Image 1 (spheres, helix red, strand yellow):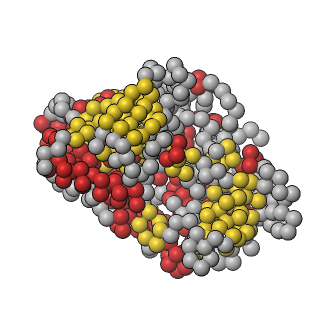
Image 2 (cartoon, each protein chain N blue to C red):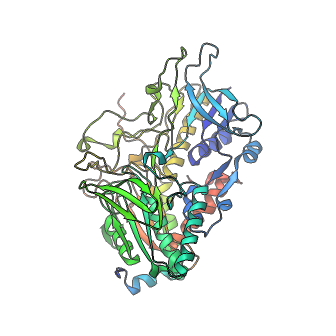
Image 3 (tube, chains in turn purple, yellow):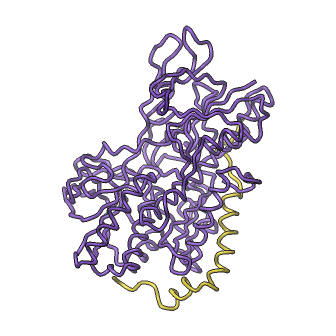
Amino acid sequence: MAKIVILGAGISGHVAASHLRRKLDKTHEVVVVSPNRNYQWIPSNIWVGIGRMKSKEILFPLAPLYKKKGIGFKQAKVTSFYPEGDINEAKPYVLAEYVVGEEKGRQEKITYDYLINATGPKLNFEATEGLNPGTNKAYSVCTYTHADHANEGLQSLIEEMKQGKEARIVIGTGHAKATCQGAAFEYILNVEQELRRQKVRDKAKITWISNEYELGDFGMDGMLLSYGSNIMKSHEMVEMVFEDRGIDWILGAGVNKIEDGLAHYETLSGEQNSIEYDFAMLIPSFSGHGFKAFDKNNQDITEKLFKGFMIVDADYSPKPYEEWTVQDWPETYQNPNYKNIFAPGIAFAPPHSISKPRKSPNGTEIFPAPPRTGMPSGITAKLVADNIIDSIKNKNESLHHKGSMGNMGAACIASAGFGMTKGSGVSITTFPIVPDYKKYPDTQGRKLGKTFGEIGLAGHWLKLMLHYAFIYKAKMKPFWYLIPE
Amino acid sequence: MTKRISNFKRFVMMNPIIQFFKFIILSIKVLLIVAGGHGGTREVTK
């Protein structure tokens, strides 16, 4: 009987665990290892960060749910991988250290037949000097605790603005190669609306700062999209929204140092600039977790498993931007060296960025890393789970389920303000996520009908509906599996 | 602040009745894109 160990209980890990448990009989063991006690629906963090939603509304504890559903749960963090076992343990295992309770600090070898690494990214705040959420007036909305802090900072500034203070708010990316511009985009629009709601908008200057070459790049090289009866570029759409909301922008900026109320950045033209602020929300760069791997003789084999993030079935051979193709992107998320290890979601090493790489004259790379948001994370986790289920049932390796980001659609329902009648959303869908310039040569690599933008109240309702639907699904309530990833 | 969205367009964007129908259409379009399938990109040679 098989034992499947899943590292991480975010969107990807939780989706994989829930599908495995539903489709495999109880003779097979499904175990989740995560240092976090709660599941959190990250896309709603932006509403926590402006105080329109409580953090308890976007999370729930994992242990009771997993106990009820027959999924093993170890609140522990993995430190190293032993995909061949060792001299004392014949089975492959991961070494994990418990993080809470009486067992805190105790290490355990967790053996497996199949391993799903869904550990996501490390929020690499250290890569930018002085960027530490809640200090130097700079915040993050990457986790619910960060979002709570951001809201405290924002509300305190709003109180000062009510007393007459003129303020500068800076929102965007906090590193030359940060990604997740979509979250910052949502947050800046929500903050702008919150200032209007609290009648202090005229006291604030709001600035978008980003490593993007153009607005609307979002780490996906921008897109050509249909908007109503028009066809426009994503930068035109975002420019329209920002100008209409009175938000100015700084592009091609690699933030490299944060001081109290001061962000230093280098531009693509090589200039070293800085901007003062009273409140900032800057997305950090993402990195791998720095895991180590060892063979059965305890020799370091980290390079067989990791390249920052985990190595999967992608084409990692270095080549110029002009030669990149969608075929470089992974389809099954299987590690080529250890076929029983998979890395869906954000845990896999992308073959390259999606946005065109750009360097300043000083040699600093300033461009977004590829985004891998909730939707592809869920889809890739489910296909990995399905392949493992087929392999177990057929008693033979089965990789029929495939999902390349070059043949997968995604929807970014970006909140542009909260409220049942005053809210707004910028809905952008894209197909495929990674542009396929051969298949769609005249539309910048994307299929137009499936790549569209929409602005309005309906977008807010849709995002709110997705919030409730996905929390319902994550709680594995009746017929949860009918809701697509 | 530069007015880039006309009053009529803003009315359409924020009118709850119009937006209700938009919501239905948008939900279906998003569902079709997301649940409409995915796959590989490499040709299989046997």
